[in-house]
Image (cartoon, rainbow, N blue to C red; front, side, top):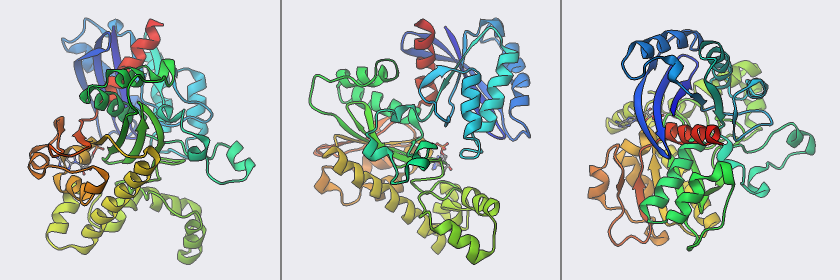
Length: 392
Ligand code: AMP
């Protein structure tokens, strides 16, 4: 089965083409375009390039297209990417303005370009369907909650891959199986002892998720992708009273306040250097106070959420780092794990220093908990779900 995974941003379209044989996925081709004015209209050209390559006989050979949709109003899970999905995306366009409009446009575009291929959407919120109401609700009046204001959670495909892979690495095939089949079967009891994982997806956009027996119990991300940890240029958690206060104090309107919170805040806002942790780390090393503050704030926020899930889960069997920063930033991993020996987390500084963008256990041999670096593999999670949906 050939499954094309479409990754749409406001100025980019990237794809990865998988041949799926059971749970295994072989990447046959990948490509796309970046820095375009309109991502959806660039899809046709990118598919022409794919067809011109030798990976597949023609575009007709593609069985399905998978979309890693972010947030739908009143809709989550893994579903056929039809008009209902487009409506759900458009219903929350203002909540995820960088993500939802390009996906709505992209799904429509694929319907025209590859009419014979099934279209499947896997919402990033899907991993959080079983979070308890005590953790997913905000303390709001009924009318707000009925309007859909709640903690949704994001990076679901990434954290789900961590749930599957960490269980495999720990030899817990019972939990790995539950995690892999979660979207079709729902949570299932496991044979062995409870398996407690804290997953840190740290990249341009970041979140920490607590996972028990392959199922999320909670996450740092809230209503929108602009919450939780400080993001590259988005604010992260902020007291709701700060927005009307700042609008009055700075004499700015709501649109300008939202633009600043979504584009000039986060690591960029604090450091005043860059939205990329590599530039910020270089500036911090050269003595830049704002850059130091940005890194320290990120570390503080990650530890805050790790602490929350240590309590929620009653301990941890594996702490996992994934995504661009988590996979590559040795100093940040060390800072996050500093002083956590009392919680069973002890890294081996040498193993940590040697690990960049590869799968590894960086815990000390005598550490009660494992500390894994697991390269992100969201596309494979989506390709597997697409295959499962088509097979059913
Ligand atoms: P992602 O969103 O997962 O692609 O992660 C992007 C972020 O990861 C970038 O903004 C960088 O701060 C960080 N990153 C990516 N590659 C590296 C690297 N080789 N070393 C350090 N940080 C990196």
